[in-house]
Length: 339
Image (tube, rainbow, N blue to C red):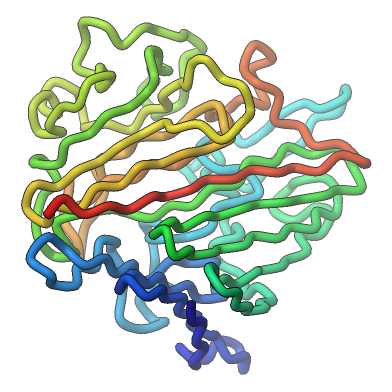
């Protein structure tokens, strides 16, 4: 196992570093300490050719203009919060409005995706990693409490990328961290993901309203275009979903233990990815708003998380972290090649 570091750019007179973790099988992942962004993930395909299976930019400038949150570490709260406010222990908190002028999305105007994290790189016999640290101060983007966050990215000889998030707070606060990588297992710049086979181990999903915020309903996927319980090409039903897929799928049964929630396969590259998580849901997003360098439906996201707007929905799983507790969320991406 190997871990390298190099300067990726300069921001506000501070050096931003790219950390590249690689194993003996030809698999590597690169992460920058600006936004905890996964910039590259290389997997040898079925023809022996190295394939970069995440969308990304060549330089820091691209990530400073990163409207789609490509590869980013998302926090303090992933996904949408209706009307950019919530009530906790009898007190109302107002958050930054950065979605349609009225809602809160992915942590706000300057979320965790837009800060420079402290970083420490490490190597072991069968694993290499980088641990990122950040203090989100009381009141940042409207959130209560000083939140101490660590996110550890590790690559193993088993071709597994694990991301472990931990957080502690000195005041009650909602916490919902995830990674926003855009996956195209056929390769970056290879076009639409309609030919990707997707399986989601989720019998239910959350319908959304006009602003893509859950209505509060929980519906079965059976008999609908939302059903991916058996492997299905993403392109088969995407035209039947207005705007494309951007919904939270519910893992059942949910135990809080590391559980397989999704599988993706590209016949073009022969690469498959299994996603395992300790979280109760996954946001399947089909890249509906990609534009510029990358186009609509050029990739998909599988964002493991608590349900969107769950801090305003007491019937949804509890997302509040309190003093003395530790937020701990693990997601593993397991890569395989069908030769």
